[in-house]
Structures are given as C-alpha cells and as structure tokens.
Image 1: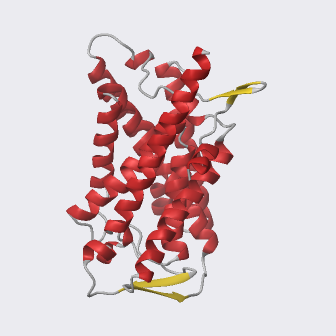
Image 2 (image 1 turned 180 degrees about the horizontal axis):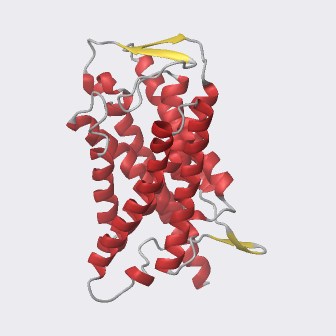
Length: 312
C-alpha cells in the first residue's frame, strides 16, 4: 500500500539521477494576502471575492437553461464552458492578486494524479459496498446502464467544480489565515454542512461527509501540493457509488446504472447510511480515515526523505 501511494505522490522535479519530492507550501501568502496589517481579514475578504466571482460565472449555466435553451447538448456545452471559465478566472485572479505561480494546477503531473485519484475513489467505494454486501445487508443486481456517458461527465464535472470551491479556495485560504490544521478542520466542517440541504441529509450524514471526504480530499492536496488527486478521488467516488453500483450519492437517487444496489431497511442506519446512501455509513467513515492516515504517513515519509537529500 505504501508503494502504491508513493507512486501516485511521486515527485515531479528531478536532477538527472536524483528525484526530489517537493511539497507546495499551501500556507504561503503573497500579494493582496501577504504579510501586513489585517492579514487575516484580507485573506477572508479575498476568499469571499474569489467565491463570488466564480459563483456568478457558474450561474451562467442556469441562465442559459432558463432563458436560452433546454436542449441537452446546449446545456452540457454550457456546463463545460462555465467550468473552464471558472478555472480560468481562478488562474487569472490568483496570478494578478496573489502574484505567484499556480503550482496547485501544475499540468505536468495532472494525468497521473487524476488517474491515481480516480483509482483511490473507486477503490474506497467498492470496498464499502462490497463489504455491506458480504455482511448480508445489501443486495446487488444487474441493471441497464443506459447513460454511462452522462455519468462520466457528471462525475468529472462535479469533481472539478467542488474541488475548485472547497479545496483550492476555501481550504487553501483558510489555511493561509489560520494555519494548516485549522484549515483542514474548518473546511471539512463546511464541506459536510454544505451537504445538509441534500435529500435525506441529517447531522450524522453531514458529519460523516466532513470526516470521510472533507479530511481525505484535503489530505491529498496537502500530500501533493496540487488539486488533481482530490479531483480524481472525488469523481471516482461518485462514479463508482452512483453509476456503477446504483446507490444513492449524498441522498441523490441513481438511475440508469450498471448495477442496482438495495439495502436492508431493517439494518441500522449508521451501518447502511439509510436513504442518504453509503456515504453516511460508519464503514465509509472508517475507510476514509484509513486512507487519510495513510496519505499523511506517506507525505511525512516523502518530506523526511526530501530533507535528508537536501541536507546531504
């Protein structure tokens, strides 16, 4: 397992025969959020400005659907255009406002880390659903996978969008303002709370999301200094749970999936997740914490290795 993580988080800078792990300092602050008077307030104001700017752009998709056309192809095109525009806006504002290179969006390792993240996300949810099946409280049946292309687009779109908002903006800037540990904790709580409006959501399901996903996805960002593993894990998680197993995703019912998973209504909700889906299950919380711990351990090992190489 350790080797698998190291393969995903392997360094991207090398000096011929020597590869050196580089960890981006997420809490570095420059430009409009640099050291000086009222720094914390400036950071929080900058976070709000980024969120508002990007949310306005994302609203264009709803405007097109409401006032231009409901044609699925047009709506799909609008979704990807607004997502690309949101990332372009983030790049432009950070370069201009924070006056720094965007190492969190480095393209060279993107494909490798996206693929690794998708593998991790698929693996976690597969273990959870199969575990519930082996316990006799879930049944899995074949179904008709009628919209696989839509499922792929939906999973990737959600992964890219939510990680832009939750990790690149909220987590990163909270970490700049209050430190890395506080940034992880506060952003995880906010990520869980954001799911309270979902169907069948409860305080327990929100807490589960905060622990298993909020911590884990921030951990991937910390370990690599980039967003790609988090995006991939988020997309793979949703895709496996909804498109493959046909289980509810954060309370949202799945239709047209490869398989159809049903849970014993008499089983404890804390074990199956109830109507919210397996994300509210204690098994998912445990799996997320295990992978988060593994990520932290690997990150620390690579950082120690880096310090040893640099001091040699």
